[in-house]
Length: 402
Ligand code: FAD
Image (cartoon, rainbow, N blue to C red; front, side, top):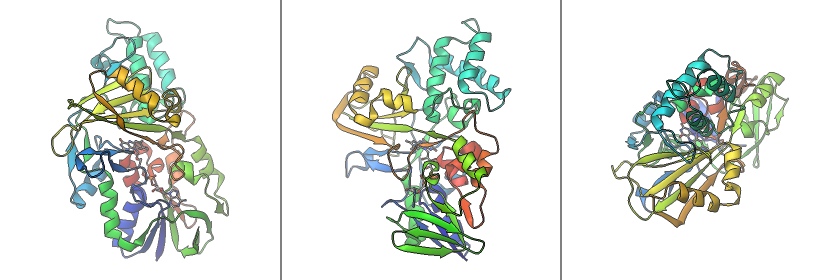
């Protein structure tokens, strides 16, 4: 049996490993000149492994069983960041503590649990503010604003369009749990799998078109056509909807794609001239968060990491015009950090031709069956990737599970 996998991100590579080890003749075709897709580790100071940052996926969160298994299988290790992804000191908005935010977030999550997924995060917030306002055990507007900013960042989408399920996911927890990264960079997982697959992975090979019939599927690249018994498409959602397929995919799949949100995010990394302690701060008005973290050596990296989520936040920070505006706002938000404004890296994904997005988001117009519809095969074409992973969508863990 011959299988072609389109895309060498975590979904495509892990699928190819399993197939290859089952004796299947598998080839992975990847458009970029590197593996890992939206997992992209980078030395901020070239040649200095102590400055490895993540331009895409960063945090290994609670319940990442599959990712942990791959880490073990590949002989890698996790590094404790010694800050918590889940707890961020709110700054810049109405006065509120991280503890008050966590208490209020639990109330919003409880309210969301009794509502259908068609209710938005913003509606839940309005409902809770109307029924449990004020101090004295209620929920303050300051806490709600901080929660809405945090949720919008984590899901890279606006709270008016996000399903209230976003208040309950792993990425939306507020407990002070430890948070990890893969020591040396998350892309180590992709490199490890690709090394195992050897010349079965072909880089710089964009798939332009797919055709399929009852007996086989054909993948069209710049070098011509390749026939296979099955094709697994793992490209990001923003790319799959623009890839020509003949005969066309059924309406139920295309409609499930169009109901799913295309989350947008950007990251900014800035070297520090003075050491700083591990910490995490949320900018409530500007829609981003920023942290200082420890790496595998146990030393806190002299780097300010920042992540902005949702298109309005990216516009506010002017990311499409470069790092200048964001850098100035970071300096205002965190005067305690000594930023080296000459050693800065901005990473965006919206205009990346092989991503077009950061990760998928469940919207209030999404339907519970959408992940299954997006994952369901059509004849000889199969589909995987983070957007097909249901409760794990949007995450590295989801890509591996898919
Ligand atoms: P991808 O990694 O996108 O892989 C798909 C591959 O297909 C890519 O390599 C792409 O180049 C290739 N491709 C596209 N089109 C074609 C074509 N026509 N022909 C051939 N190849 C093609 N997750 C977490 O768990 N924790 C985090 O902290 C986190 N933070 C994130 C921050 C950012 C800024 C971003 C962008 C993502 C983040 N994620 C995070 C999400 C995580 O990166 C993704 O869920 C996961 O990596 C997706 O893997 P995938 O294999 O589904 O897709």
